[in-house]
Image 1 (cartoon, rainbow, N blue to C red):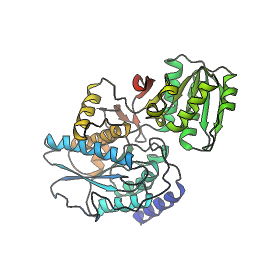
Image 2 (cartoon, helix red, strand yellow):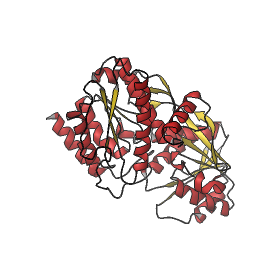
Image 3 (cartoon, rainbow, N blue to C red):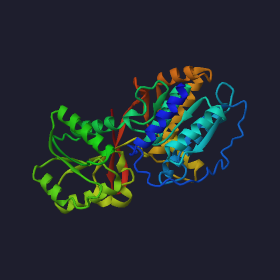
Image 4 (cartoon, rainbow, N blue to C red):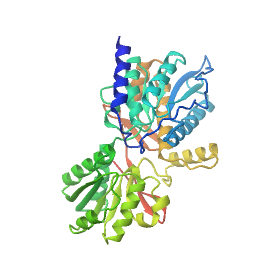
Length: 396
């Protein structure tokens, strides 16, 4: 009965969740019905003696690049553990399915992983909507689950078995405000945000609250819609109030457009943003010069853990530099595998307790968990310099 109720709850969530939040920066408008190319018949040939860990990621569809980055990094983490002798003398088998970024498909493959593949733990899903759908099922089944990249606040709330490796949206917005006041010395800031997007709105609200708590003044709190392309009027209005910083928590294409118009109206401010800016330097380097944004890790971070990961990832994947989602996928896998090692068994309760007690140096920072299963760790503040992303500071 409990399992049936959990499935019904997840299906209801599927229809109510319309936004992919935070690290998942694109909406899924089309859902391709394509068989998992790694597993076209939806079957596995499991090693009976292995520790079986599930992985649910989108490998087809509009956010496939997110899932592929996470899968590549998780495979790398498992390969490293196995090469070192495995866990307590057992090899780890990573069983991966494509959920096509779809909530119903996520429920289906989760049940397959539990009932057919007999997994003891789950990495994923990747985006918030699918993580919200699977979370209740993992809780009911007693399967420890860690999403690498789902940033929606509700993914972990109320669950003992559900964790995440990334920070949540309010934490990010507040940390950028802390950086603005403490590192940049800003006293006045304006906010320009997408009022129809939960990610943008959440970051804007958190930035405003933290900046004002620090004694700063928000000169403008201006919203726009996804269809807006001309921002000159509102930017001119902002210019009249003389802010030192402009916080624009949106995705890189919109941010690049706004930044160009900031230059056109002669608004002299330091631009600030969240992880939605990742890759903004590729197309908008000139107008984004000198801007700062929060991200999960920086590729130029001299920390040996970061550089060792980048070297290993490049070696495994044809010289490709891992993005932030890959870093989080690697960390999620490392946290889960370390917990299984610490637990000394594949019992769900023992693994869950070991995850809760995590105290680990990882690629995206030193990680411990709060009471909700959300990580407490520093955020990397990145500066855009001559078209390159440079680590400016780590802020917690």
